[in-house]
Image (cartoon, rainbow, N blue to C red; front, side):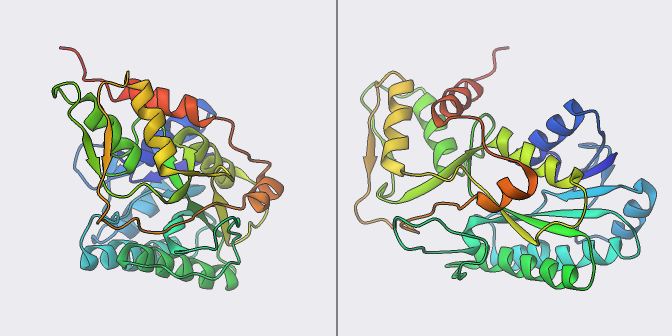
Length: 294
C-alpha cells in the first residue's frame, strides 16, 4: 500500500511516517519546505494536482495545517481552503483521505461527560472554527461518495510533542538552565484534558488508512480519560526531579474547562484503543526533550 503523508515533518506526521514504515507500507512524505521530504507540496500552492497524479497514492494522510498559534487568515487558507483543494485534487481517484481534525472543534463540554462524535460543536476560537470547517467539507464529500474520514485528535503527548502545547512547554521550561527554585510560570491549570500518546495517535491514523470498506465520517482519537492539567504538571515536576516548581497565573484564561473523548466508535470500527499510559508518555517526552549532545 502506498501512503502519502502530507505534513510529514510535523509532530504527528513524523510518527505516522515511522509507524507506517514499520508496518511495511510504502510511504511517500510531503512537506512545504524544499528538500525536507520526498516531495515538496503546499496545500495552497499550484502543484497539488500534479503531485497527487505523480504519486498515485492508495491513501493520503493530511497532517498539514496551521495550529492555534497561527494567524486567522493563514488558518483559513490551509485548514479550510487547503482541505477543499486537496479533495478536488483527489477527485476521480480511489485514494482514501484521512484528514486530521481536533478536539478544539467541540469546544466546551459538560464536566464529567465523554464527548461522542455526534456531540454539539461549539469551537471557541479561530483554530477550532477552521478545523471544524475542514471537517464539514469532508463530511459533505463523504455524503457524495468520497472515501474519507476525519480523525479528531484530542491532546497529544509523548516524545517530540510540540513545544507550543502545555506538556511540551513544561518539559522545555523544566529543562532550561535556570537556578533551582526558579518557577515555571504558566496559565491556570484547573482545566481537564484528554491526553493521548503520539504513537497511539499514529497507530490510529495508519489503521484508518488501511481499514477495509467505508468509514464513519468522524472518529475521535483520545485516551477516554480526562485528567486535570495541574496533575500533569505535577507529574512532570516529579519526573524533572522537583528542583523547580510550577506557578500558575490566576488571572489567565484556562480555556476549555473539560474535554474527554468517547472512543467507543473508533474501537468498534478499527479495533483501536490506546496502549501507552500517561506516565510512560511523560517519561518518554522528558527524555526526548533532553538537549542533544555534540
